[in-house]
Image (cartoon, rainbow over all chains, first blue to last red; front, side, top):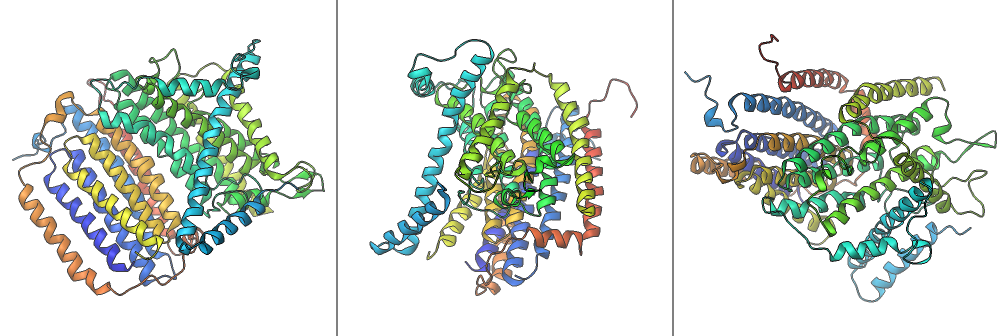
Length: 101
Length: 358
Length: 170
């Protein structure tokens, strides 16, 4: 298992997440694709840490912070989604046009 | 004397060498031996609910001045097997409005993590599947996965009451996970290790040759941590007094209303497996699992002590069910967030001070 | 395929990529969320393969046991009965796919091929103590700042999600 294999998997996961962010109508679908992108980046960091810098754990410490901040962001974002749903009774992004010009 | 741990490890080594000498590649014989170990462990974990269901019915019967199951086998020993056979042959109904795949996978996802969690638990001297360095964290992480099974059960039933029951049960489990993990943190701080085997080993010492150095016997920190862990484990496994989500008189039967036959059996298997797992964890973390009363070695083997202490705590679980009334959902939640959580923080602080001054 | 880690890697890779595809293509949002749970769990498995045992357990604890449960809650609370019949993707499907493919090939060809010969060199050691020393030593300031961020996120989430009584001021 070379580093290349892990980078390929992480690149594929990242681009699948990118496709999801661009094409999903449901705002929860967009959230889930963002989480996929976060995880692809985490996988990348840990793979580089393991293969190129096996002595220390800086990559893993960084990933711990990314996981924590992704959790915080997901919590705030999802409570926003709940508040939006309560107001306009829909979770589809076409209907969220209040700020439209 | 009668220790089976070291003998078992030697047995697996001999089995591996036998496989290799008979023409298998070394990796193939290693995988085969591991597969046999895993199969035996799964069989062992399957044995747990059989014993616990019978124990619960007998204990509850005696507490209520009646006899319990007496028909099937002497003193009703085979009652659980009869119940299992009945559930196996029941018709499997999937409601029309339900999501079919979610309905099928919910009991599996609720039940499978229970088997995985038994891996790092030391059932005696050298008697564990794998000595993980992150044992405690591993068990907490994997048992969090079964909450997804509860949510799937609630959603996959296709009716609003099951969904509400599933949401309530999941909220309860997730809330009580926090003080549970925090109550174990003092143990981890004290013994500087997350490996259950090392924590159990570190407690096999004596003060003044008589008093064992179990964590529960430390003046304030031990008892508070043990009590919080016990109460949170009772809440985690949805048992009375915290069983508002699945009790017979509330919301029909909560999230497992629409599950019949083997799926229902799997949900209950999960619950009893988690009860035994929580008792085994409490024994290994707080009661020095495998440690005898007078000395650490002797005629009575370590697995006997471990199982004895675990069954004592299981008895406490069963005792709670038939003694206390049920708590309401809001009482339950405020008990967790407003009492248990600050108490576990204070406990961590006190343990830190103790470590600083010893 | 000459050792157990290789086989395990390919199984995990197939699971992760397969469930990621289900996440972005499925019609039913609940199925998407469940597929995302599987994908996150397999990424945790990758972490374990790479020797990051503490992070593998932390990933499953936080992501599967926390974030996905919140997401499943919100999916359950915001789903309309006929929603599973609606189309879930907008009309940017083609250009989205083009961009995703371009990104994937750029990442793999430009950055990945350079590391084709880097083989696993180190033995796997437990990392909990090392991470603990790092967090309390070199990374203590981000550690404290992250706790403030989490506090802010907690307060914010409670503020947004709580029901507003009719006609009251915040």
